[in-house]
Amino acid sequence: MKVQLLNILNKYGEVIRYLVVGILTTVFSFLIYYLCSRVVKLDYKISIILSWFMTVIFAFFSNKIIVFKSNTNYIKDFFAEIINFFKYRILSLLIDFFLMLILVELINIYDVIAKIVVQIVIVIINYIFSKFFVFNTKA
Image 1: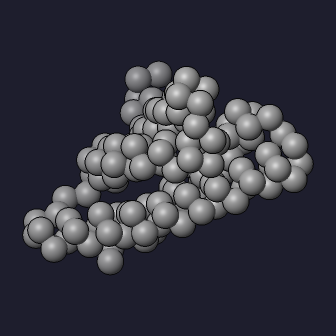
Image 2: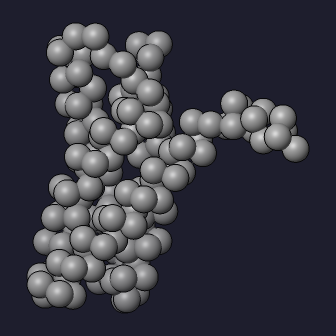
Image 3: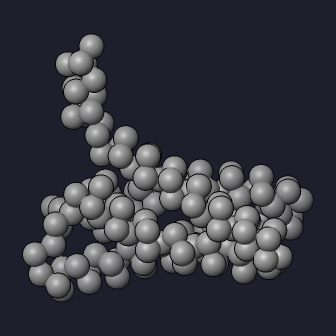
């Protein structure tokens, strides 16, 4: 049993770590969105942007350190990673924003439900971006 668990962790460790970090990041994003939209009573579009901004910094460091275990020896490499990370997160923000517009304004889905659905899509997209374009150690 212990050996099987270690084999699974060795084979799928990165994906498991990404899912855990992704879930935590999504919960954090949702919490910030909820606080902005419900407690502070900001428009949902502004709440999306604020929740993105606050979570992208957490996401960068948790993905760099925990998920992809990326080591940068030079400051220029660190900045290259963070610039690429933000570039792809801006792209996922646009996807998030437009999917929310479609679901909330065109299809009339309750915004909190729409946000949950959209976040699942965003987690998948962000893994692909991070794995192949940001923390790709072969590059």
